Length: 424
Ligand SMILES: [Zn+2]
View 1 (cartoon, rainbow, N blue to C red):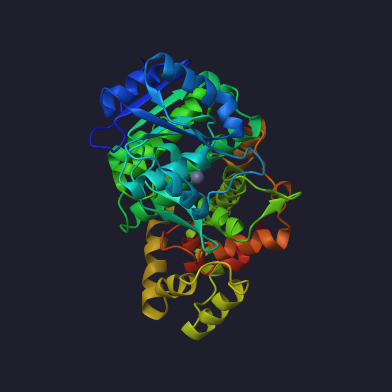
View 2: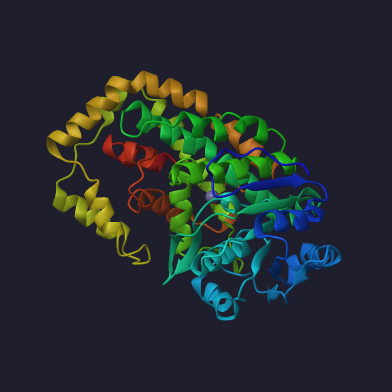
């Protein structure tokens, strides 16, 4: 069994990634759940065919009891919504080991249902599409809003690379984009580290960022992409926060998610929204640091009064789909007067170091786009159904919805939003 080393102290204790890893599942279940585990597979019509049937046969052959599986329909596309967690909870068997056989959505539904029941579960991923397999918490829609609901990460993960290889190509592309997002997300972390606001954790950085360029170097290498995504999940477990995985590009994707972005009637995948966010965030970094410190000072617009900012926030949030908290979050982080002046000076003092550190972190925009294209990820807003107005609105509004400090806050506080956003 090809066990991958995971940092100690995490909720996930076993991680296998190899061709044929399905065959390791009986041993994994017995190791973590005792001699007579009762497996309860949860899948959908597609993932049951891709891996569930074979897994059930392997388990039975190994003498493990397999309860009747819970199968979501394969179509329409299953949404990560709390209603589906309730469906699982309604029939959740006593004393079972839930085994999530599927992509990010099924994993999140099982993770949350198991968390509510106080039961640990085993994850058998069928597509390298997200970094959420190994993270704690489940990203679910509740009352029209995407929320991360608390629940432990899987106790064990058995990723069969033959099955991952057979995943639909667009799911693989989505996973590649979600991994690429760690590049600008890292640059966001560099900003707050450099400014003394949120120091980088060296162990977490090492886990995610050090192997990142290697893991991104071949978009056809399913194993590496999956390892990169898994490492990010562990980093989130270590931090108890999504800072290592998500920056401005994810905030933009959340906006389009809350706006229910569809392309030709289909929901756009998380990874594809993040892909556009990654391009936009990188473009903003490039535009910002193409300016010298003197130019940044010269072009800076004066700060707004609180009342004017409130009006601006109201206008951006007018669709009303961004959550009840957004306005409060945006006003809480609003700086004016002396506080704003000090923040700008802090930036100017660090300008050259920030430019150099973020330049080293980021791919140049043209290279980034070429890499994403090679991996069949979208690089232009229209490719995911975003009109230019909706795109620019999303970039500006993304700054409002979370406390997390990113390039979007930097550009706003420096009084350069109008100049730089219009250039996008
Ligand atoms: Zn993501």
